[in-house]
Length: 203
Ligand SMILES: [Zn+2]
Ligand SMILES: [Zn+2]
Image (cartoon, rainbow, N blue to C red; front, side, top):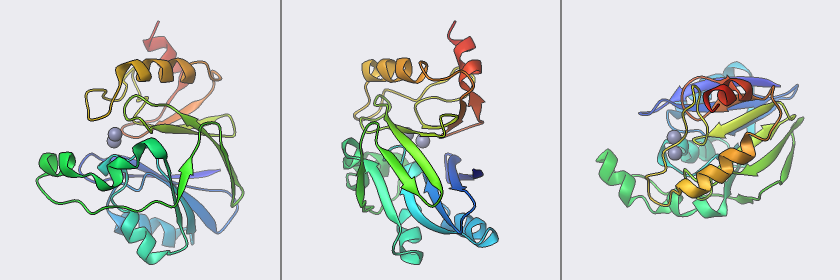
């Protein structure tokens, strides 16, 4: 599987374009700056079919409307518990000092659901805590896109935000840390890491 990593927007949110011997691809967390995403899609001659959201916070979703304008058949996937973030933008607007557009979604993600197509397959792991609809995407049992749940160097996502829950975060982390040792983790912000390295921070 090929992974293209872009750091987009105000919070340098990680966006990932994934593809595997195909001219079609999936985009995880297109946070902002559509032009940068478009440049990569053109460079590798890729057409996106799915947009997978680890959660609905503004810094992970702001390029969706532009992607849908250019590629109208692309489908946006989100967990139902994070739908409120796609339209209820008041909190973020106060924080950013600018208006945010609402974003539409197409399909809902379910815990343990398998998504297939375009020579790709992923399993959805519902990991509430940072937000109630946070999910991780597990590819080939070796690569985990962890959104804002787990970061490198022992860090985890904030649980002091609207609809966050520290108790849920604890259970979600317990679940992730039960996965295989050699798992490579690509977080929503910062560098990638491995589950093994992250375990050491928690000894
Ligand atoms: Zn977030
Ligand atoms: Zn984020």
